Length: 120
Image 1 (cartoon, rainbow, N blue to C red):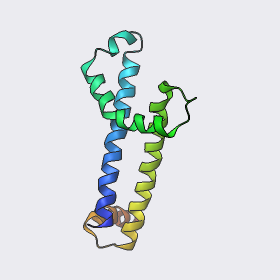
Image 2 (cartoon, rainbow, N blue to C red; image 1 turned 60 degrees about the horizontal axis):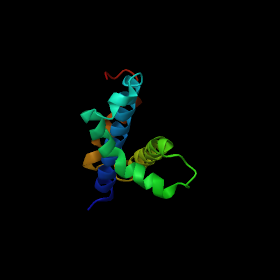
Image 3 (cartoon, rainbow, N blue to C red; image 1 turned 90 degrees about the vertical axis):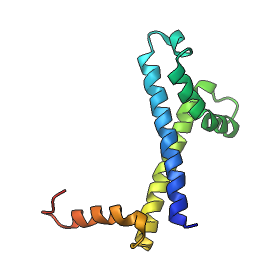
């Protein structure tokens, strides 16, 4: 299995987890006046179930004095840092293997930026 392919899979999993955290946060903002209705919302429970593995890992990693309500924020921050690291790693691997199939879109963007008058 290719390193770049494995990196793409991990990056996709991190992106899905980040989207679940963002959706969970947006639902909390929408239900802020009626917080008691949020616990019965099926969609919110789906997002909680999707983010629970990452929050559980954060509970295991963080000290006990960190409050449980802060764990989703910490998990989101760690996932965001991982996503940035994976994106940088992908760019590095694409620089090493410029002819790789995954790197074609990145090469096309780079070529368009090199030519000042090229259409986007």
